[in-house]
Length: 185
Image 1 (cartoon, helix red, strand yellow):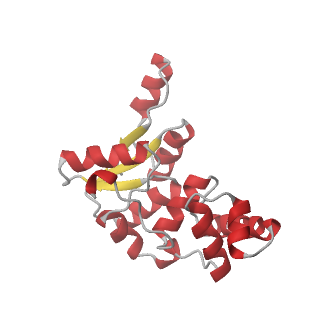
Image 2 (cartoon, one colour):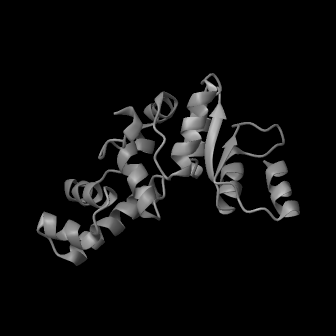
Image 3 (tube, one colour):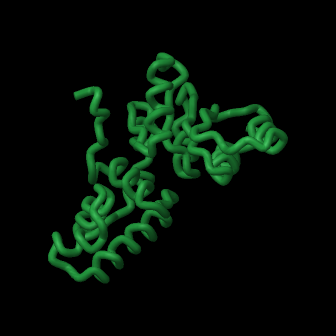
């Protein structure tokens, strides 16, 4: 991780779209520190690990990693994962599910039914005005619901400051289903 940031500083290169990062680097840093440093540089992070430490995986996800890919995954799966994250798509797989499954508080932001409805439509791509119209509520009510959703996600250590982050949380929590690659159809 330090080598990546040093290389960026010395080369003047722009941030990588996606950085594939091991959970343990052996340099005394924590996974949270590493993920946050790289994310602050503007890169998305995929954890590449044997995933035998679910608590560390959850820590990485809570710090902002986009997902996890097992070191036992074929290189084709790693490449597909990098491509998905580079395009802003959520990365949901068995490794991610296993890490989250062990900690229900991580996955549960305790959203009300109305908050879930507003989040589902908004995260699916509708503008907030259309969400309000579709649900028969005032625009200000829809906006208040999204603001409460963001606060609740922050409270459980899963911030969602952008619409893409809200989409990720909606997929993670089963409010929306992952978008499948059109090539798989």
